[in-house]
Image (cartoon, rainbow, N blue to C red; front, side):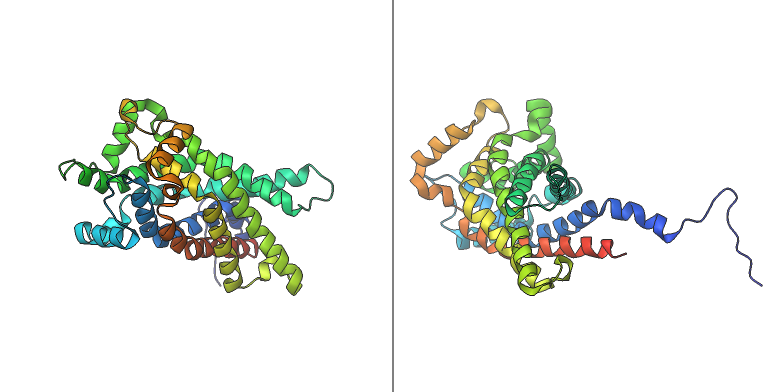
Length: 317
């Protein structure tokens, strides 16, 4: 005869009680899983993109994406491709949680403003734009520190190799020492310029692709296969970058500029556009486009597929 023992004053929790917090924060969990996957896969391509965008137009350090890859690996090893990754990895919980939670809540808000609750295709795009504005305040600091770390090799090469290369902790300290609490938000206006329309396209197109597939095959979104979600996510990611890449170049220039305000070349969006166009015409707004597009399809396909499948798994518990 067995006897169940429990600590005095403690009542064993039922599985349903334990699952409630998980289901409440499913967007946080799913977003974090997707964010970690996309960072591990996409960061090397992002390093090449940022370095090509940030280098001088008049005296470039790299002749193209292949040369950038070769120089990075020969001088810094494979780890050079992952330089600055601690910033996006450490910030994944905050950024991806805010990204997917904001999108979910934006959809809830828009649905509550009408009878019936079902969103139209245009409303998915609107929800994506709302999400882009919110997450800029989380993504901006992550991208700023990542960019500062990624362009150190360029700055050292332009200075004849004598420029010291601070680590992440030192870079964070310098940004606060020079600019206080505004330090991490360098280039925030450019981040929002990119994020609002880009996320409208990103989330809006992904949701529309899923809706079209469900109508075509007469199924629920949760029934869509892994390859189908990967393809839809990859296409949504490609649209994000193909349509808004010039805005990303502006953002990269502003975020990789000097931390000290008095030493900055790219202080405003308008000033950055004028300077870049003067330096290299329209072509300069597409520097780093190749590695970006090589990254966008697989990385975003894997991330959106992961997020969707994790959310569906949690819903099914």
